[in-house]
Length: 179
Image 1 (cartoon, rainbow, N blue to C red):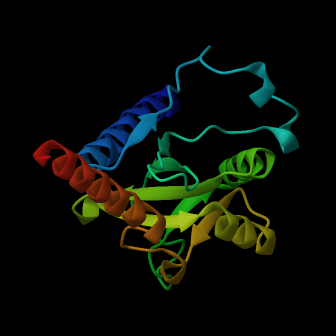
Image 2: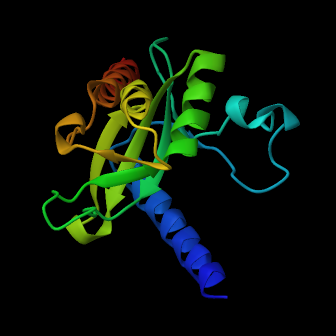
Image 3: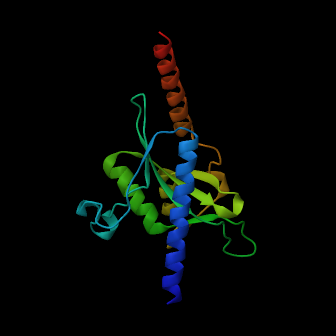
């Protein structure tokens, strides 16, 4: 029964993390689409045998100027250490890494995982799925612990360019309205 309760709590925290990220995107005027994660809202294509299963990300960051869209999967996590000697690190389930990487490979889409640490003022940490896959190759556990040196604390350049594209298009609209 307590395991079910933990799943429910973790699910709520995951939804809260997605909402916090969505608020951030709106505040920064970054165009996006949120992918519905409800059951029945996805093709059976995504549910293949375990090693080929594909996990859908949570968001698509849209390009304004014909560059590639970026796919984002948001994770709620607190940094934990596996022993008293270890530095606290984020972790991700190994299956999540494989299934998100399968999405990246199948559809040739750029995919980033965003960790939100509620204990660190809702700070965002970013990592490209290809880096996570490389870490996964090196270890053979059920979860992947991510060294801080591999995480980006700032918005990746690819998302920054979305902000710049948006501001350029806003300038064009202002110029057109002035005429």
